[in-house]
Length: 320
Image (cartoon, rainbow, N blue to C red):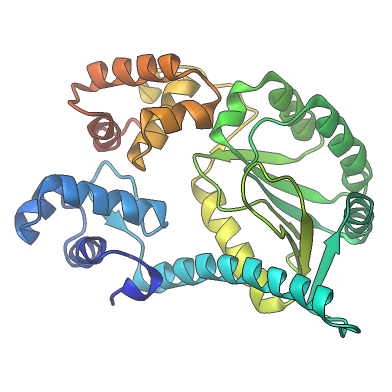
């Protein structure tokens, strides 16, 4: 099966097909078999990982089955379509004199209106909230508002699962908020990257921003009730949740963890998906100098000649 229709490159498709045929081969072996330079093979591997089609593994290249891969790619495309549909609904609202109300999507604009709609959604939630929080560290004021809003939710026994960016581990305010969430029985994990800010309530209602562009602020929200759309988003959440790292539990550095600090582990996770040192600095909320120092130390320990090779060696040796 070829995934060109989903925007996957020809080399990544070849790498995926070869990995299905012969699981566990190294990138070097893939390069020799396919006759493709190692740097292009490495780039194709990063592309597969970024799209959720491959997982870092000490046993060589490991890809997800065809059915799961197709579902992941369709889910990602549906996210793009959701945003496009939200903009279409907003445009229709502006241009139509009497737009017909939709039972599958609501478009909400304005801070008071958004706050009220989220309050109503919270009151109506009965068993679970799942959240992507890709915005990085938040202000103490926003954390306090979040706790006030969620206290009543938790008092009714509603469970909560949230995924933050890995950079949240470096923000003391966020860590205090996570500690509070853990005390309420909420689970929190982190991932190197997240596709979009999102809330899913009771696996039946999904909330996404109208404009997902970072730094643009919340221009409005789209509230979806369409079962197919919500199912696709829930599937995407579960896929990322399965590989995300728990946050809120202290780690004891042992031989099993190879003496890695939390920062070093996050850096290695980002290196395995091809992030540059500058990208790592921005994502972790540290200076470029600090990021270079951590990467340099890891390269030395792993005897790697490049940052990406350090990530590859870490996976190969079972460090992450």
